[in-house]
Length: 100
Ligand code: FES
Image (tube, rainbow, N blue to C red; front, side, top):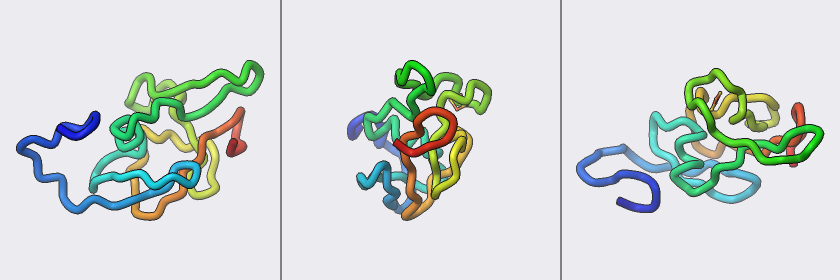
């Protein structure tokens, strides 16, 4: 096992990188953005509008909307439902749609 990702006995395919707030993140084919970020140790996806408190992955199935981030310039993308792709640019979302 490496970090938070189970590696023993699995063939995940070729790893690739995408970028979170400019930092390179490793992902594998088929992983959601949220899964790759959690494996990396990143649990905050956005900050709320009024209180500026952090929110992260809660339901993991597209219901709670707490995992929304800005993906390739598009705000409010549910990262638990969006597959990571090479060189994708992901940003922490502030409020209803600005990158922080
Ligand atoms: S974690 Fe709930 S919608 Fe993504």
